[in-house]
Every structure is written in structure tokens, then in C-alpha cells.
Length: 145
Image (cartoon, rainbow, N blue to C red; front, side, top):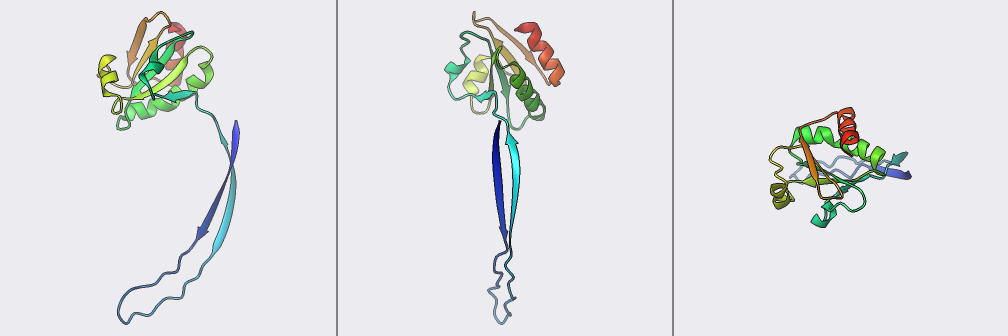
């Protein structure tokens, strides 16, 4: 895990008004510095950048077809990420936004989302549609991989 130190500097700016006859208010500038240590986990989920990423080689590819506007997709995303962290040695995990990859969504018949597709090294595909809890998703993958 990487650790990142975030520094935030807050300063109040000089406030003036551009009116006729108004008096300028006296500005008070203050600076404060806050330091916070945040742990950042590296994601095991790839964002699709090339359709060739969906070809399974030595291990299966697990694809989450989703969209930013889809609430069940947004609720499922952390579960997908968590299971990907646990099972990255068994499969490659990829997230596909159907709004950015319309032809690919049509090819995989992703008419309802969230939709998870498992592409096995032999080319066989299995899919499921709908929201799953982390436990349900992990069980689904353990049965299929």
C-alpha cells in the first residue's frame, strides 16, 4: 500500500466590492495548514482501454458492465473492487462503462446492468445480471472460476 500525505492550505482572499460609494471592508487573511496521512490501495480493477483486454489468456476475465447513472451499478462497484482484491490471482477484473463502449455492450448483449460476464480461457462465457452483495458475488465467482 502506498501512503500519500495530503497538505491543504486554506487562505481567505481579499474581499472588495465594485459599487459606487461603497466602503471597502477590511480583509483578514489567514493561512492554516493541515496534514493528513491517507492509505491508498491499488485497484485490482482495470478500466477498459482496449477491447483486446477482454480476451482471456492464462486466467479468466471478469467484466463488470455498468454506467455512472445506474444506482445499482454504483452500489455494486465497491463489491466488485473488494472481490477483485481478494481474487486477483484467479482472474483479471475489468470495469466497462456502457456509455463509453456502446458497441461492446451490444456485442455482449448488456441490455440490463449491472451485468457481470466471465470470459474463460477456452472462450466460454457466463453472465449474470443484477446487483449482488459482496458475499453473493464472491460465491458466484467461486462456483464459476
